[in-house]
Amino acid sequence: MLINYLVKKVKSSLINELSLLAKLPDLEVELAKLESKIITTEKQLKVIEQSQQQFTGHYEIWREKRVTAIIEHYGPLWFKDKKILEVGCGYADIGIAFTTLGAVVTCSDARQEHLDVVNERYPFIKTVLADINIEWPFDDEYDLIIHMGVLYHLENIAFSLEKTLQAGTQVILETEVSDSSSGDFVLQVEENSNGYDQSITGLGSRPSIKHLENYFNKYSMQHERLETSSCNSTFHQYNWKQTGSDEWRHGLRAMWFISKKSQ
Ligand SMILES: C[S@@+](CC[C@H](N)C(=O)[O-])C[C@H]1O[C@@H](n2cnc3c(N)ncnc32)[C@H](O)[C@@H]1O
Figure 1: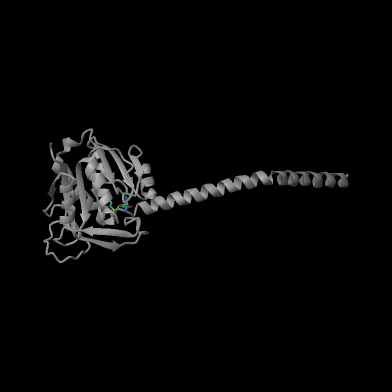
Figure 2: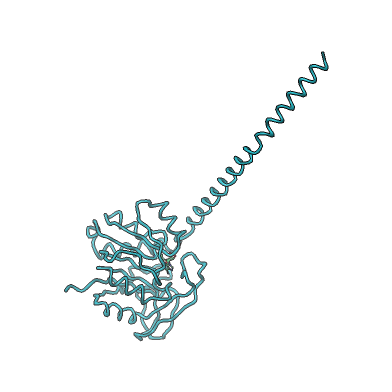
């Protein structure tokens, strides 16, 4: 009796183990799926964590001042239904301000990881990946092109200026510049292409104010430079005095409201 009972017990436990062994391949597949989900979630968390530390700090008040200056320039009602392109948008924190005033905004950057954050935060904004040193995959006409904080991170400013000044009825150009009175002056500066807000190619340009204004004239654009302290913020300065030293330092900035001359 006892022997029969023990044989039965051993048999049933063997059957259990065998059936578990049979399920092992399925379990391994499930485990691999779970591992891949964990890796994806970890990556997403890292992107979210990183994005909370980028385009913050000194950017915040500076951005607010520039957006305020733009709204004061055109008036808040002007933006309704306007077609706007923002290049070098980062996380589109400038462009988003104008969507709240009724504009339809397309945002572009050379870094896909920035556009991923824009898509996550503002899914209603169209995003376009483009290195504006060499690419212009945009429409032929915009009511306004916002070209802020990116020109000095380009090694080929001529291409970007030509495309922008041809496609924008209105353009806002904001950039670091050199302290030079020469119309030919453009300083080439090496940058860290791993910096999230730096040149994508590792080379940037610091042109003189006159050099840029020559472009505006070449493309028959009227231009008005902001010469007050209204957008000064931490080290970013707009009302500095030109000395003609042919030097560049961080924070020497210029911003223009540019528009096509009426025919
Ligand atoms: C200094 S941040 C400016 C962000 C924002 N426009 C502002 O003014 O606060 C420069 C931005 O330009 C982008 N950028 C750098 N080189 C670029 C290029 N060749 N084409 C397009 N975007 C570029 C960077 O990825 C970054 O988002």
